[in-house]
Image (cartoon, rainbow, N blue to C red):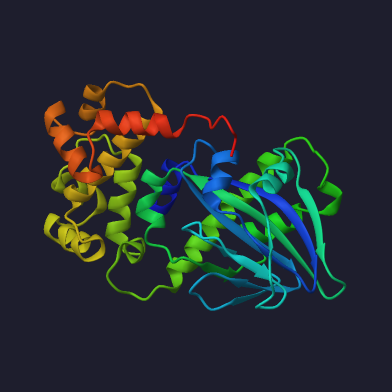
Length: 326
């Protein structure tokens, strides 16, 4: 078990590769708000993370209040917080604004849409897609990521495999293609997160805690077996360290004591269960390690600002289909 793998499993990350774009300079396009894409293409997800993989040529990526980022073939960029951004052959060009309707029309579960756009200059090819996940559970990871993440991909990485799998000859519907590309794009996300963590300096913080031998083991157990009757003693024994040393490692990397961190994670799992299941609040409270519904309600309100019952009603209201489909 490792903490990153366990967390990614729990947050139900799903990846989609939906556009194989062939662009000729000069060109510039602006993406629609990811929240609008989520409402139409991933209604069960509350967080959308767009990504772009350069397979040929080069481009520039611009986002408000950030300097342009130049990408070359073999590089990937993603936006963990779902920011609207502009992709262009040269910075400063007026972009074509892509609508949510256009994205929806291009997206098919069993094929890759091919797009050609621009002038008569140098060619750039991009694979564009997004990752969808639940905001409550993914917050532990995504909240700590920068607004823009970009890195070079290796020859055996998920991005490289995705690039080789998206070919013009495979643009038409093909049995199982959507599932294959989805899994490869999810691997791309994992590779990017790992590359980012490896470049972090050794300092205090949750992400660097994933590189801490003992914190990472402890987090993996919490994410993988949150319902176990953990104590500081049993957790320390499982990771092979004294309880005092474990508390010191957790305080340095997460700013919390181990049991405090576990309690917070259980509350997030409870919030997920309230939003996605009909399980009784009393049973969810027991699963979360609380001896009474009243104690659970107080802790839940401190964490999320509303009662469990109100949270459930709000979640279900948010997931009702929009009659206009906008």
